[in-house]
Picture (cartoon, rainbow, N blue to C red):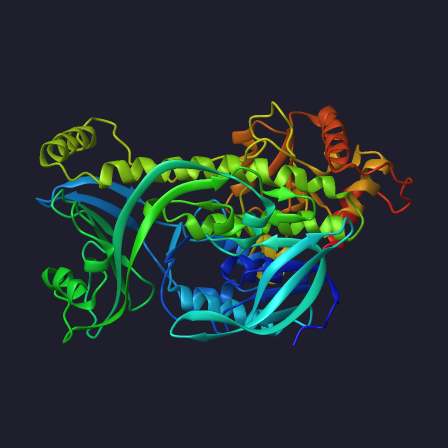
Length: 542
């Protein structure tokens, strides 16, 4: 039962992966969070199946990556083949990504949500109101009041019981899915790119282990474009495109799923049919992500085709981008104008990911035989061109926001490497946390900062260090600074670059630009000594 009228720091509507992750990130900073979820139990069937190295680093920041790693499997390549079995494209996802984790990871969403839920329930800062649906909210200027209705579920339908209550939070986050109540009540429009294809998604549990070759691939057959991927350890997923004349009602039936699976050796004797559902793959985003004290995140803010595996990943990036902003605001360090940059930055990133997914979809979703044959010829010819290289995973920058305008590195994703410590080799964040970071070629560069600059950086929890203080055992950070052409780089808590200093003289102005961007006044000169000494030792793993 909610505490009637009680005020928390943040109310989150929606308890999917985005809401779960955001609640944990905020709780780890000491903030009180209430999550409202109308469904009484975690959804038991698969949906998302992929996350990338950046999301793994976010899960590391949330303190759950070890448990999540137990329910994932990595993939090395993603192959595209035509109906004749000829290789059209092979995306190489072997090894670790720039965030220090495997490039691509496959999982089952119910298992992921169960892991996140266990960590949420272990926190005394988070309250989850299951079985309560948000019906309305009102921004009072200093808080948001949320009206709730109790409900029951029967045959998959949620019905209000008549019991109501009201809660409040200093801020409201709508992570309530594609049919978002928060987005609707805010009156926010969407930019729809008009991409819409229906696909039957089928998840199975094979009864006998076998080696799948290829393990992860796309069948570009105009007779039936099909995706074949792992659905997490000991699971497989097929996605079958609906053809002209086929309807969701006729396709979303177990007998149809089995008939499509039969050529792949899957039948009731060899596999358990875990789930089948027809999805309309869409491409859209909300045009405004913040109004007053209410913001959007996850599917409430954007939808994208699954071909790049970035739908859930984008929601988790939203959570990470919101968490550090809300933390500074709730602690009184920054004004809530800091939220103004959230939407434009994330829209810029999401838009690029959506457009990339559409590009893939436009190649995959060809059902005309002549057009498919021409596509195959072009892609095979490209592969046979001397010097051809497999296209890398997209690394889109953030859109305009809290970044140094004109700096080509600003808005790019930072790196995480393994470093040597007295306790052995560890990932950087496990040693130094994941707040603001100033990384310089040497600690001498940092010692030139003024006391005011040091006090400001200290006030926002910055770690500052030179490469001479870091056992960069794989050379990740030295190579990165070389690539940036920078003497120092200033990185935000969401791992994105705020800006770079090209020499020692430009570091202080860079710090000043961050202080101005956060709208934080100059503090008193700190008597605590050089920044490099203080910062290298004051902040441990978070």
